[in-house]
Amino acid sequence: MKLFKKGIVLIALLSMVFALAGCQPAAKEEAKSEPVALTISAAASLKDAMAEIQTLYLKEAPDTTLTLNFGSSGSLAQQIQQGAEVDVFMSASSKEMNNVKDAGFMNDNTVKNILGNEIVLVVPKDSTTTIADFAQVVDPAITKLALGEPSSVPAGQYAVDVFTYYNVMDQISDKVIYGKDVKEVLTWVETGNVDAGVVYSTDAKISKTVKIVATAPPESHKAIVYPAGVVKASTNADAASAFVDFLSTAAAKEIFVKYGFTTL
Image 1 (cartoon, rainbow, N blue to C red):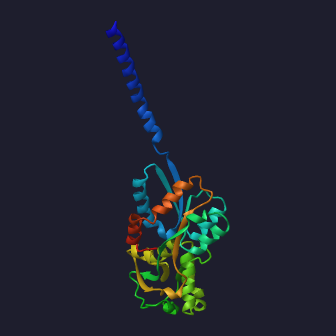
Image 2 (cartoon, rainbow, N blue to C red; image 1 turned 30 degrees about the vertical axis):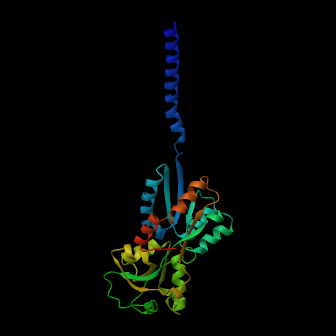
């Protein structure tokens, strides 16, 4: 009888062990991170660097899906204010970021300056022009000069600053053609559709078909700053904030520097 009772107790204990073991996978299942989808609206000049940033981030946060939306900072800011579903905004200037913040569309405490850049004058690589300064675009040999649309493209705003600094903006107004973003300006120069253009140094450095003929001195334009932050309407604010923080990590900075940006 004693053996019988011991057998019953042993079977009961084993049943409990197997039951607990069967529960463990379920507990682990519950501990898994929920998939998160983030939409990042970033200035067009960040396109190449952000492709690598995306790859690196997904290795660290594999349950995250990133959708990258590129355009001029002004256009992206307008989209956010019109209700576009965006989690993170990365602008090429403080002006556009401040516009969105002041309108109440950003989580202000998440906004931080992450990058800097330079403004350069570029011509097609096979160009025979001898210009070596922004002021020299008044030369009759430059008949078409491409700039970003100043009202929405920060690079265009900086370009106007530079030409105003050199007192030539009025003299070149007839030859200026405005692009919807800095990438379009670069394409026009690459294809020879314009004689020269003003872009960021980061854009010029990744192109094999343009050459830099001049770099704007810092005092000739407003400081070039790229801020990033979480959009207030984001439904994944914590994940979005984690992504913004990641942009300032050593690993992310290494990628940005590789593409010619300065880190702040």
